[in-house]
Length: 353
Ligand SMILES: *Cc1c(COP(=O)(O)O)cnc(C)c1O
Image (tube, rainbow, N blue to C red; front, side, top):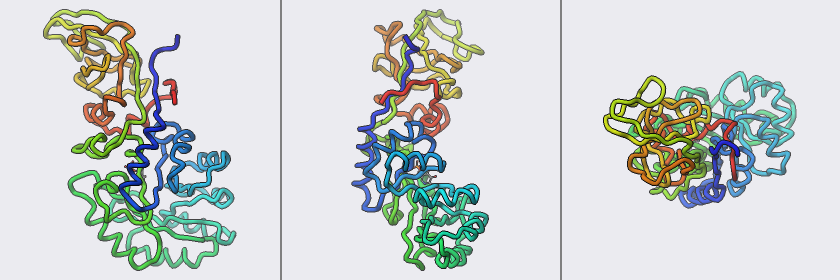
């Protein structure tokens, strides 16, 4: 028998979550499937998201694979092209491309084919990661509008605080002030902005994490939004023992029992993508009951507290995250975000759809 760890991907949940997005907006939906669809499998996720108007990712080879299997949606390259030789491929496969710097503009100038490209012009409205400053945009827009190779321009920006109290006001104001001068379609909202700021929906929304069934907010659960978890990571207990008061568990003895404790060992570790920084007390399900991890996460195993789960034994089912155990909670306990856990699932974990 193979090692009992497994990731179950529920594609009907993915479809449900897309319908949740659809009910929240009348904008076109650019479903973000970067990072192997946040760890869920690019091709399968893309197929399940066929009702979205577009798909956004980073790697041109992934975009070409989608086209080669018959995909007809708008496909957007979120970081654009990385070399001038990408441009003929972008045209041939009818991909849309972000342009965020002058290097890309210069490469574009040297590309001759007429009306070949749909460009998403990225505006740096305050994130200071990618994009042109608002004051640079009018000149860039002129350059693109008169460019022989450019068929359509979409104006886009990305928010730094859509999931936090600070919100999007100053970035939205900067972007709106500038985009209102053009008839170009606009795209601003990630999942958090889509959920919290209808004024920022524009013509295209760009949900990622919520499609995979996780909430982008600490103060609102996925369930409250109507989202269903898509990935459920399960394994089994492979060892059970009683330890006495004062005995320790795992590397560096990070957990020390202050009373007799029944512990289990789960076949899941950081080499599977479980966060090594998850401390003692990180929530986990055994036989459908909530308990806590104990001690340091090792490469292939984690300790769990079975003191209150009397029927737990070798072979008992464990849910690391997903159905019944929100990935956001596990991420929060480990000092990270759901995105990182989902993307970090490693290649050795068998995936079942
Ligand atoms: C990843 C990404 C998104 C999706 O963000 P979520 O928070 O996962 O909804 C949207 N837009 C851009 C530019 C991105 O890079």
